[in-house]
Picture: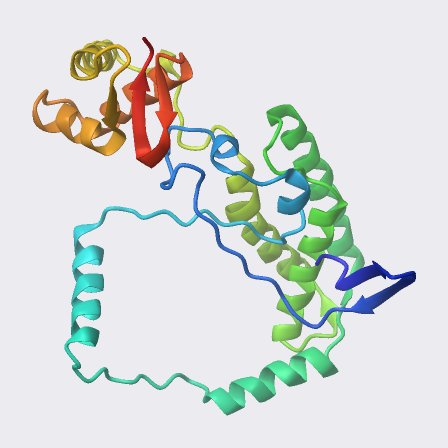
Length: 266
């Protein structure tokens, strides 16, 4: 994908063909839902050789927002009720947008300026050093450098420029940072126990005791039902309930089983 070519070696024929398509792929986490308290690496069931071939990798999470959930439900119900949906016209018609994209793709061939190239080199080296220290899930290699270059060139094409400037590289680096680097960060949304206050540590210990009462040794319980019981019956914050479950999973006191169930060790 990153080379925009495909190699074929079949029936004694070895050749290389140009590719004329982009690949957009989507996948669910290993355990069905994304867990903020678990490392991203533990939730991706892909080889790093596959992940490194995508220019950008985004984490799309189902955030619980009452207003957003209500609007989405309202839209879905209106579709099934047969209500008329108002069509919105954008600044460009579909035909004009196709012509614009075709022109940018076929007529624009921007080149990287020296200042932009220097910025690319400096940022690539610094990203590699940072990811090496963090032992990132997605390896940062020359493929990722080529991805940033492609994004920079695409941004310049959109503006019909002859040169790829510093501004284009900065925007490409921003996109790469909020997508692939954010996904590769193993410690995203996790906080160490040393950062907890004394009250939070006590609540965390209380949550673990409640889990041991609710799940007998060798017994099973649905993960989401267990979280709900901790919040509703024991009065524990949802964040601390999830953290307690995560810690017990890391200690192998709980085991993740099929159908989002947790089993306590016997």
